[in-house]
Length: 304
Image 1 (tube, one colour):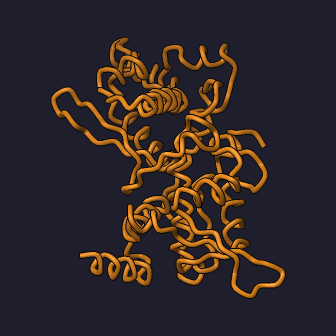
Image 2 (cartoon, one colour):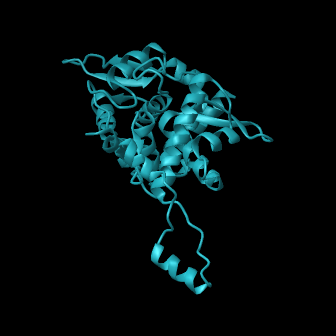
């Protein structure tokens, strides 16, 4: 499976056994997640994006970056002729806009690695030249990809020049760039791991855990195009960092293992923040999961 195909399933969270009991299947519009997955597939590779949104050669990418044509060209020409030869404005195809989103995500990842602010003028100049009028939609989709795929949030620090500070989301202080695929933030995967554990009653068996990750295109012993080998990343790096506890089930023979939140996860984030992140992925209100919402609310009140 190539990276682009692999990315289509990432963040397409299935309903786990516990989630199925509470009817937590994916519902609603999944287009933003699908678009984000396409961006993630190319953001960590050296390939380019064609008008179709897939990895392509530099030649096809150059063609994709050529001036856009009007959508529905025949009808546009007809209406232009009826208006006395004045052509309607031309709009970029979705493929070209996706390419600009990819360019912006790549630029933002570089800014995050360098711990530099990203300004609107830089983003327009470096990632969307000639498409500045579409800044709002490109920026919105790119920032959504940064959050959902890489676990990176953007905070505006200067509203006059529109400069943004990039940082790991949900209060997490770990970015994981030294683990797995070096230089790529792993906070997004860490948050997904915390989501799975929380949704599965705060303790999930290894079998169920990997069944969910397999459905997202992550397999133990197989390198992932963004995160590297996920088993070592989760059971070694996430455990050593204190975010995940990986322990043997007492008295299990043969030995079975399970995952829980580690002490650093409890110290840096909350169940409510994780539930809200999960709900944003599946396009639901957090209160759609009353049991989990009540649990997260109780924890929130206990912390006060």
